[in-house]
Image 1: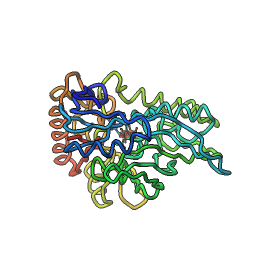
Image 2 (image 1 turned 135 degrees about the vertical axis):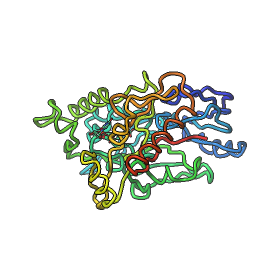
Image 3 (image 1 turned 30 degrees about the vertical axis):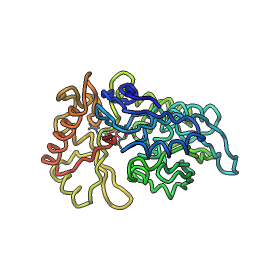
Image 4 (image 1 turned 120 degrees about the vertical axis):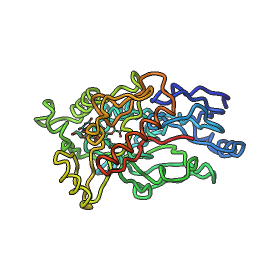
Length: 334
Ligand code: EPU
């Protein structure tokens, strides 16, 4: 265990942060020891790649950094490959590796920052695919009870940027590995406008071509967290009732929204923030990105307070202008 460990480089927003004590989890044999260790601290939490978190200057208690590695083909079924990846693997490197092996189906999720273990927590999604469509099961250690569980995709209760792991009491679950069900009869997913209209994907695209196109689109629109601190989309796209959407559309005919299967509408938060005049605007040491208003960036030297202040100003303004409540997407660590 390490004391007073600097985590400024372990959160992609680049906020200053010192963990009182850090435990690096690298292998399954450490799990029982971990469950004992947490009892020595008043609080503890689990940290993955730090790409979807907002952190305070000091993290009291124990911070567990997930760093176990390994990828293997568990079984070849008639219809799918069953692949297991350890939680500490870097998500994008894992996606690239699966493509090299000819296990297709994750290419739409290329270049998402973070680790494999963090991916199910917020059910990552992009370009027409959400993780839950590819998850077979999740192996997770209950830190409080000291027991390993395997959850089927259904038991993970996935929904848009949400899962039972995200809703559970912080510090309960440590995801150890994720098992993926990748179809042997691969089909391209091209319904998302950025891919449907992409020049390189017009005639019988391969999974590799989709992977390359997704990387290109993301590099064009989204700031690279290794160069400009950010935590991806800062707010979820709000889901509103049909009546509320009709009212919104009557006042703002250009509003961008997607009809959902249950009759509700998912409104593009980036559009709301952009229209409210926040795109490219700075406050304190943070600003909303000039090419994607949904992403808050660190202008250099930002601290937690800057982030919370700007987030609140935007929430109040969007509520006043559009009557829509924006919900923060990254997890706030306390
Ligand atoms: N828009 C604007 N102004 C902006 C940004 C967006 O008007 O500044 C409008 C545009 O009309 C655009 C629409 O909003 O067509 C949607 O924007 P975009 O296609 O960039 O996607 P998004 O809804 O803003 C979501 C995810 C992203 C994911 C992309 C692609 C959420 C919260 N965000 O963004 O995920 O990469 O779709 O699938 O669902 C993340 O979660 O961190 C993330 C980056």
